[in-house]
Amino acid sequence: MEFDVDLIADDAIGSEPLRLDEQVVPDLEPPTDPDARGAGVPAHLSPSSASMFQQCPRKWKHRYLDRLPDPPGEPALAGTFAHRVLELLLQRPAGDRTIGNAKLIAREIWPETEADPEFTALGLDEDAERAFRWRAWQAIEGLWRIEDPTDVVVDATEQDVQVTVGGVPFRGIIDRVDVEADGLVIADYTSGRAPSARFADARLAQVLLYAAALAELRGRRPVRARLLYLNQRIIEVSVTEENLGQVVATLQETWEQLLRSCADESFAARTGPLCAWCPFVAHCPEGQAEVEQRHLAGRVRQDAPALTVMALAG
Ligand code: SF4
Image (cartoon, rainbow, N blue to C red):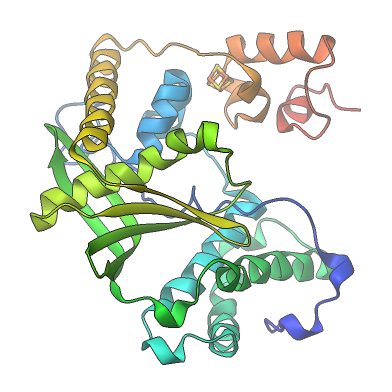
């Protein structure tokens, strides 16, 4: 089927956000990688793996050491597609970054997504596939609601950064490095709801880590780091020695805890509301107990995947 957004009815639109922010950073190198520091120890730490370890070490173990299946799901795949279209669009000369060209790119690369085994595994019927394409297109078009891409001076897209940051082997892929009058700017596409001012700092920590890594790689500190909430707004932070120092200190702390966990083969199960959405709940007795307790108290959303896994749905 062709990627034709003009033929997609508005009533096919779903409200589930895309997950542009979770699918673009590659995983850690396999634990058996020849560069690895030892059996069961990752070669690199990426922002997404660091964040997962902070949220729950057991989840991190299942994902990165045990490599249990974690299918990306529809929002993540739609996000991957939207992300690829924007990447190719921003690689074009500034004047060519039009909505029309974004549609052409989307049509051109749609067959790749359509043939992707992870996409076919979703088993979408025709209506669901149209809704998928429409959601992806909404994210793509959402770029024009927050910036004019013809004004952006792009230094790099998909900048793969593998450096040591504060003694920690780091790897990340930066969506975009822009050039502005006063220096380089880190820009990362993301989705979900843009945070309130109270939670903005936590969300900006990842792009600050990218700034720290790029500073190592290029030998000069970017001036700003920003998150582009497609369809909503941009949040950004000026990069300073102080805020870089804070995120690097947190990265070091996470890395040290992770190495200790690997050495002890002890990965704490940090239970909480996210257990109901954890893809590894079937392997985690502590998580199951948490979900059961919350379910009995009426504190789990009916669409939480763990309810189906644990036969509690309905
Ligand atoms: S179910 Fe909860 S405690 Fe268990 S691995 Fe997942 S997030 Fe961690």
